[in-house]
Amino acid sequence: MMHSLRARLLWWVLLPLGAFMLVAGVMAYDAARQTADLLQDNELLASARTIGEDVDWSNGELTADIPPAALEIFESPYRDHVFYKVVAGDRLLGGTPDLDLPVSHKPADYPMFYDTTLDGQSIRAVAYQRQLYNFGMALTVTVIVGKTQASREGMVAQLWHPQLVRQGLMLVLALLLVLIGLTTELRPLMKLKDDVADRDPMELEPVRVDRLPTELRPIVDAINQCIARLKLHTSTQRQFIADAAHQLRTPLTLLDTQVECARQSVAEGPALSDALAGIHRTSRKMTEITNQLLLLARAESAPSPAPNVPVDMTQVVSSVLEELILSAQRREIDLGAEIDEGDLRVAGSEQLLTALVDNLVDNAIRYNQEGGFVTARCRRVSDEVVLEVVDNGPGIPAEMRAHVFERFYRGMTDVEGTGLGLSIVQRIAQSHGGTVAVAPGEGRVGLVATVRLPAWKE
Ligand SMILES: Nc1ncnc2c1ncn2[C@@H]1O[C@H](COP(=O)(O)OP(=O)(O)O)[C@@H](O)[C@H]1O
Ligand SMILES: [Mg+2]
Picture 1 (tube, protein in one colour):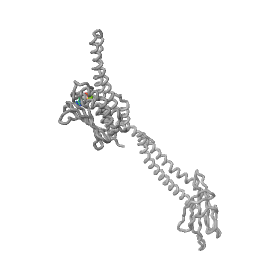
Picture 2 (cartoon, rainbow, N blue to C red):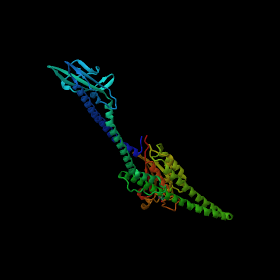
Picture 3 (spheres, rainbow, N blue to C red):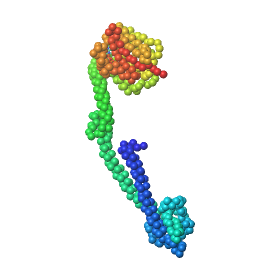
Picture 4 (cartoon, helix red, strand yellow):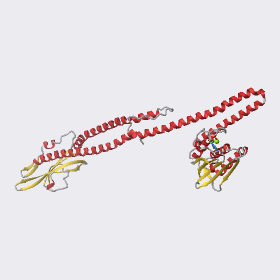
């Protein structure tokens, strides 16, 4: 329902306040009714007494001569109907015969107030008794005075309504104060919102906080931490673009020179062939850089965790070795595989895992000396598939090992390369929930690159 903080807080203030007002209103109504009842009942009793005084013996008979003053008490703007009845013993002396007597007849109960009806109108009545004596004879005279309820209701309203209005005004006042308070207190939050919303996308400075309630501080801290991470990421990204541009600029400059050379040597025959060979080398290098850059971009934008598709590492390794067998032969390197029997499936992308194996085996062939060997081993260790690419080349010195996974880092610059291979391998291993590490081989000879990937689970 309501998602505005202000509306919600307002609601939580109004709910108890409203409940309180309701109870107070009911109590005020009760008090008003009691007061009105008391006043009305007193009037009825006064009238009944006056009438009772006028009942007397006359010639041995009881007579009731009701003075108009007895009923004048009730004159009010509400035009109530007033009824009375005078009974001596069982004899009706005067008044309205239909006016009911109270149910109880115990003398102790008198004067007695009660509610009754007459001709369908509800009546408040009082019964008053008086003993009359004459020549030793005692007679009980009962006087009943009843009245319709209009003036009583009117009085209740008169007593109650001003209270109600007062409470309503208080409610409105409280509402106004709360609204003003909330608006003032929420201002820093709104300012924070504007500060974040109006930001330049390039501006990665932390949000400044002064005068912020303690409850909001964790939010601002979280935003600032997020900004800090974003800043780090952005600067890494910028550095990457700068490095990539730099990598591409060198072969481009070279290409420019080589084309210029080719143009000049058109006449000279054999020099042209050299120039074209150079152009070919450079353009191959550029293609390689571009391919590696694309692969890295693809590995970085790959969904993590990797897709839940089984990929058989046995097949991946064999296909990579098939691809690279020619370049191994060219360097007289003995390229082989030791693949265990059993389930060597992992979950992920076949294309990326192929790139991972390809980069490791390619390194092992490239950096090895002629006549060396390269072996790709693959086996299952509990719930992991472990891939090892072993060579007997120069290996990587300890101080270099920490850097080989950095982008564009190159150790042996006399061998062609881009410095992106191991970054790509690491990125792909991570996105498949695995790890990669490089270590010296057996007897400190060569290099072992080890990749551990979680095995495929049905
Ligand atoms: N099998 C290996 N033997 C020796 N050195 C290696 C081997 N694999 C990688 N390296 C070193 O690690 C560096 C980074 O490798 P990599 O990220 O694949 O980039 P690149 O091969 O393009 O230079 C290489 O320049 C090389 O010095
Ligand atoms: Mg490489």
